[in-house]
Length: 548
Image 1 (tube, rainbow, N blue to C red):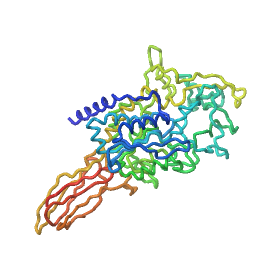
Image 2: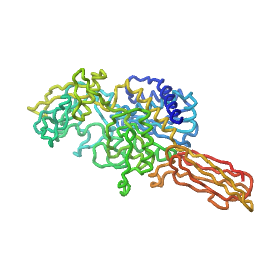
Image 3: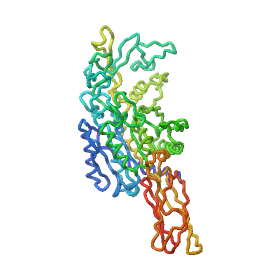
Image 4: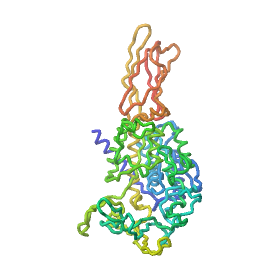
């Protein structure tokens, strides 16, 4: 019966939220994102508030949306963060699209109830300087903001950027015929190159580079251009110095500081959902006991791993995604920071990846023998009738490779990480369903099994259990270690003539896992009614009235 109700709930959300199509016809630049936010705030003034957390050095707004009714900061909350990597345009659409779809169904009682009880903090785009490159005259994948950097440590800033050698307005790839090269043509699809495997006696025939020139003549190409510091490399957990895009020190950038400053004050956030490159939702994290013995821990705690697994199971049922590629977090990754340094349950997904396509026997296609995302994309794109995202290889004259054959071409920028826009609405709808389901798993406390016993001398023994009715914990185990998150506070409000003789009148208790309870007992002297309060920012507050 419970499973049937759950599936009915999901069907309602899929139909209700999926019925509201997105109005944009392409990914959002800064201006169109601002307009979408303005439309939401004017249409739903009682349910959404917007503000600018800060502006980037490039003059772009870092937006924050608060979805919920009054006293939003006093209710349990989920933080939804998009645009953590400028190459991942889909993350921006998933974040702002979630806000649009949820508010579009705000007349439904279930949505009203959700927004009355919980809050969503939505940060649609943390990398607006970088995502704007998709819309620029010269299109290339960019992760960093407009901070000027010296990535090659030669004392000069931004002196070796991208060069459009074939004049098509986009930076693709450059393959150079080279007997010492490490790449060979992919036998599955010669339009793509893969690393030659020396252990199998294979020889490379090409050097593969991004399209460009060695402007500063240091033997490197495009290593120090515009696109300075990446939001997703600048967080404090596992931060690495002297890595291109990482910044001079952790949290050096306005974007990171503004978001982190807000979140550290938002004690009501119980989960962070990141729409970005990392993925611990298709496949949950695993418990590594050795990682907990280090001075700086590198493993999730076992109880938090179980919560991740539970949420992952729900995610896969709702989104029905499959064949997700394995991901490895870069140093300074935001979603890792959200767990290890912010102490919250942190869930991350790119939302889309190149689907695997079976070979078409009618076209005499064969099963791939190499794991190559480019070849996989080209086969999928052909099946979908997508013909404008690949640039055929073309020979060019290159001043840095005199006498060598140089060709420019390959898959276009952004296409391996972002689907055609016609697919975005369905992806947003599924992930909106997931966020609603995650909110339904939130920690919630209830007083249950109240028992009173009259004793001598006007004493009453009061026993009650405080139950977490939610599926996930009131706060994480790593939160216990940080001593920063707020514990559940319990208080007996004794009135005139009443006295708590045994048991603590005010106390805090450790985190309650999903469905876990804590039994509490007091001896109270006096008569009449007494109230007992319990609560913390991630659960909200509950009271119970007891007759002595």
